Amino acid sequence: MSSIPDISAPRPTILIVDDETDILRLVEKILTEQGYDVILSRGAQNAINAFSRMARKPDLILTDVVMPGMSGPMLIDHLLAISQNLRVLFMSGYDERQVVQKYVVDKGFALIPKPFTPQQLAEAVKGALSKPLQGGTPA
Image (tube, rainbow, N blue to C red; front, side, top):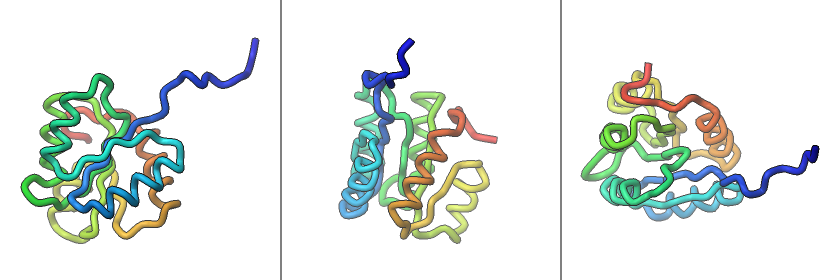
């Protein structure tokens, strides 16, 4: 038997959602250098549209918490209604705010505070990908 890795196996795909183009580009650069396939969405509504068109759902959704129009937690609630099993990692520059505590941390979702280093992001993504899928409201 050969121990050659299966190069046909798909790379993990991450849907990145933020309302700031600079953040999207930075996160895209970091994660593509780590070997991930990334899909960028500027804002929650664009993410919903992209998610609905995907034949294969992303392995992880990395979303900002605070965005105009629809927050990250509201986006995830919407996506969980479409697909019961998701892995989610939130990012926020407001890690002490009540909304982050109530709708992210208290619900059991992972959070990486902004600003972060490339290494911190890579570790947070790797950790989130190793967790079981979350369906509905996590414990």
